[in-house]
Amino acid sequence: MTSRTLIADLAAAAEGPVRVAGWVDTVRDQKKVQFIVLRDESGAAQLVNPAVREGDEGDPTITDAISSLTTGSFISVEGELKKDERVKLGGLEVKIGALEVVGAALDSPIADDSSIDKRLDWRFLDLRRPEQNLIFRVQTTFLHALRTYWVDNGFIEIHTPKLMASASESRAELFEVDYFETKAYLAQSPQFFKQMAQPAGFGKVFEVAPAFRADPSFTSRHATEFISVDAEISWVDSHEDVMRMHEELLVAGLTAVKQKHGAEIEAAFGIEVTVPATPFPRIPLAEAKEIVAKRGYTVPRNDADMDPEGERQIAAYVKEEYGHEFVFLTDYASSIRPFYHRRHDEDAGLTNSYDLIFNGVEISTGAQREHRIDVLVEQAKEKGLDPEELSFYLDFFRYGVPPHGGFGMGLSRVIMLLLHQPSIREVTYLFRGPNRLLP
Image (cartoon, rainbow, N blue to C red; front, top):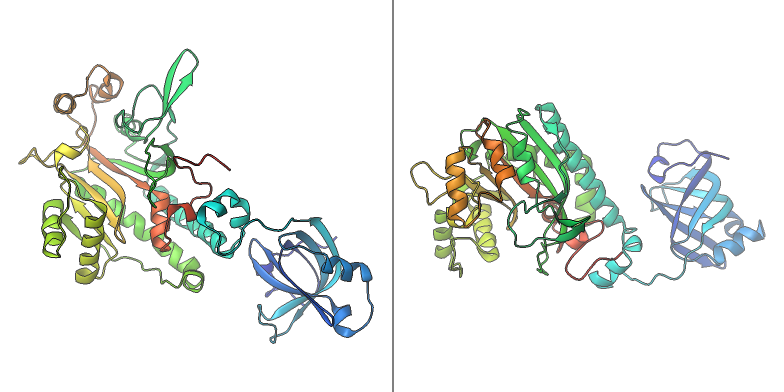
């Protein structure tokens, strides 16, 4: 049997015998012509039944097989590759010599105008759309570039446990599971364990792995299970060192995406990938709130945090003033930050922390961590936490630890905002939310 050729490789192949395989996108079955548009993981190509076109009877089994093909059926075709610039689909076509139906398909239960929930019910069919294929190739390229940056800069990859004896952030939004004779919890983040790598002397670490939040939100940017992109580095002077690493990392990822997929993204989604200039704009949160207020919007929160509309407003300001899609909001109040964020030396009411906003949506939180054990214990008490319950974590700091910091970033949010998609449901392979555990 002739080895299979990917459709994307046909343009570079010589005319002659070829074998292609994939699923049927469309069939044109007319009296004097039979065409099939075949798709595989790399693209689409036109197949033609030459017997019908040339007016002879040819092989009736092929003619009949094409007439009975259903959209979505997987087929394997052997034939003759011909280059013809008149063919709109890539300037080539395959003249069918033999056709095998490998997997016949029923009529599709979804259509182009189906709702997102309906499409998620049949996600394996929804993923056949070329736009979906591109989304996950973009994600692959992006993550590969991040890993390349980390490895080239001396980072160590770690894999932290997702079953924990206690909460990694707080007891809110925590999934509890039976664990033999006791209880365990699904990790909300790798926070404690990536910090554990600092007294271990690893220096710089990263992880790309699932995280879990029992958050009953139904917004376009929330999920109960998501991929968290995390990094932690030793010997920082402040959160500025973390931000510098973070922006360099994103520039590496977006540069790779633009180089490899820029033209495809523009054709599929009508957007141009922009590689951001460094340094990214940095605005203290208090100043950002003043800017937003001058734009006519007052953040209606009782705490000191920013809200989603405030994020959109400050992003719009940064786009107008700096032509930039990213902005670091810095120096968050200690009242709304975890106990392990280091506070300003001159103002304990503020932390050495940031949120990173991309196209109007928060994608990441980062900070310098508090590494002084006495200060850490006091800050935990201030938050109403029992140091005894945190003993395994606090032990990290009793045997020597360098000043350190890092961030956690939601992968799906980055890809959603990069490709200007309306929801992370569109860019998550299999989405999990409060009312979705299938497929």
